[in-house]
Amino acid sequence: MIRVLVAEDEPPIQRRTKRLIEHIDPDFSVVATAGDGEEALEKMSKQHIDVLFTDIRMPVMDGMQLMKKMQTLHPDCAIVVVSGYRDFEYVSSAVRAQAVDYLLKPVTEEMLEKLLFTLKETYKTNKQEQLQQSVASRINHMIPYCAPDNLQAVQVGVCLFCAGSMPNIMEFDSDRQNMNIWGNVSLTELAKSLCGDHLFFVQEYIGDSASERILVYQQKNMVGSEWIRELYQNVLEQSDLLINCVNLSDAVAVSNIGTICRKLNHFLTNMTMIGKSLYKSVSLEVLNAPGNKTNESISDSEKAMQFADIIISKNPFNVQAFHTELFMRFDREGWTQRRILSFFMCVITFLEARSQNPGNVFQCRKWFRQAVSEASSLGELEEIVKSLNTFDDMINDGNETIQNVEKYLRDHYIEHITGQVLSKEFGYVPSYISYLFRKAYGQSPVEYLTKLRLDKAKELMHKHPSLLVRDIAEQVGYKNQFHFSRVFKRVEGIWPSDFKN
Image 1 (spheres, rainbow, N blue to C red):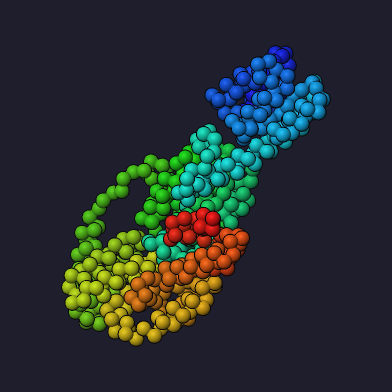
Image 2 (cartoon, rainbow, N blue to C red):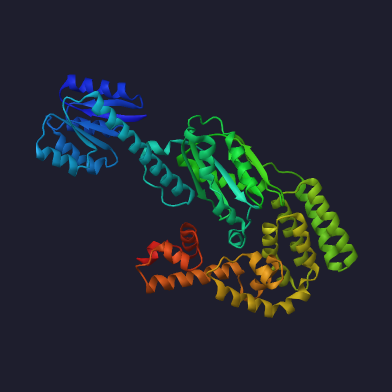
């Protein structure tokens, strides 16, 4: 509903204007009237007004004074002047106040119908832009966008998509090809094609990692969101990767978007399974419920200790047999990605306690975090795990290779480099390359590449301060300006635009 205030000192004209507006378009509601500019401002201070219809000549405070104050106090309110005078001074004042139109009395139904149509289209556009900025600020954990208070209470739907398994550590996400799908699939356009005019608002945003997308929408009937499952199926058909999605079945206020997105991420992380796509629709009640504790952790701990003992024994036959049994169990019992990760972290803890060189074992933690995060199937993860009992022998042979990896990153930092690219180039699985690289340089290839790119970006900003952030991002290997800005803020602590200034 578009809220209107009519400021007019002649009651008959005031009543006629109100009646005409609401008769021509029921989407407009005259929620207040005023006999002068001062009364109009007082009423606008107590309630939100979208459009002001004002006369020029009024007692106490005339329309010219009212419009001048409106520019400071209510800059987002559209102004329409209704006057019986053609004076150039009046028209000029209306133009300076950025009035939408200047109507001469008596106002006809035809004149008003055209104007209301224009006002409604402008209102829709402005509201969508404000809503988009407000949601973006909540999702990106920025200073909240100063949208009108009534906008923060708008009810919207939210769902989270992730291409591939949920990343366990954000830094590893850039090492994957999962985000490629989002360069070819637009959730916004798919949603519009499925729902058409039933959607008032729909927009997708990058989540906490480049592989995640958050779809925020507002529809005529916020109760049903069955079309989200159809949207998910469309995305799944267009992707060679796993697609995981959790949809919130209840509508939430814009002001709560940030919190809800974090909870959806946590929920999906706990549900995701390696090698399997997942769709879940969850209510707000379930999302807010505390997690249920089980006895799984005790059983998993015992199994982890058994695995650590077998690895230390270095009996190839026993290790192979245990690998097979373990991964069959993962598949049979439907272990989630997070549970598998916890299991291997427990194995490494036991190995640390029994190893003569616990420092080397400790280095395996991030290697395994990455392995579990990147694995596209249980079979692929099993191949990685098989190297656990032999990786000490391989480290000495990997020094020259890792030096070549470092040189490759320096020579090709502008290109799209993923763990798969490095794996194809140097013949090791991505997680093992990352492990060796971290051991040699104290950071993963992703961290090294990120620092290299940001150093180049800062150098460009110093040498060419007039360059746009978009151009700088492209020149250091980022195709997405917003992703570059978020990485820059996370690493450097300020936005690129602030660094330039």
